Image 1 (tube, rainbow, N blue to C red):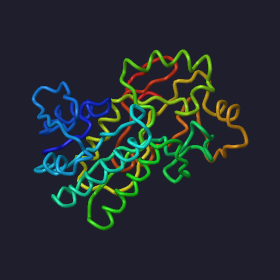
Image 2 (cartoon, rainbow, N blue to C red):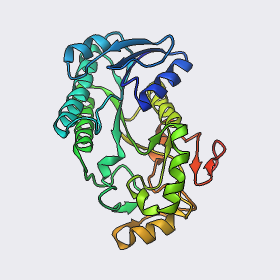
Image 3 (cartoon, rainbow, N blue to C red):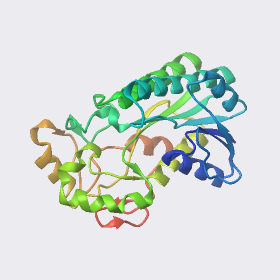
Image 4 (cartoon, one colour):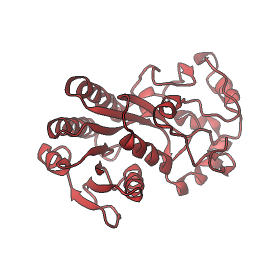
Length: 281
């Protein structure tokens, strides 16, 4: 399959390119920076330029859209560039006949950095409370994807990624969170190995059929030393309704929907003790 990946030099993008290429797909990377991907075609593309987008995506069978600015530029540019980029990608896919699109949203749309969860486990119906221009643009992207699915027949899957890290980035974060659990509430004490995020994108690309919409995507366990139920009670208290039991160190964010749709389960499970065996709790 010919797959175009935007943001191909980024943290998630680089892993997605490697995963797709490793499974035999013909990958084209679109990014302002050149990634280090032998055998992968690279196009220097500015997604705020619709012409770049159309020419870059032409001939693709599927698209994984991951390109976005975060905090490296002013708020106005974060919002305008990110919302324009996702719209251009979706519009081009509709016009070019590319039906399968995977886009990246963020768990920042839930606003945990500023407010406790309304309830746990957090599913995709949890209220959205954008905390900055980045998450506001992500919500705009989700709405745009819904529009193009309903009006143009796209099959758009949007992952609300949380705590995505490269393997080498996770161990240094365990100690500080163990010492101060309150510092980890913004990501619900959870980290997600970027290789698992990449595999979710690949599964969504390869699926025979998909249910368009948003899907939570995060690690299965926390990297906290205390049990999740204890942390929720101590740090959130009455502000958070506990709807289902959270055994052990289970992440407070539910990925049941992604598992049911794509058979996705984290293969790289990180806990307070480090990297557990694949498939371990």
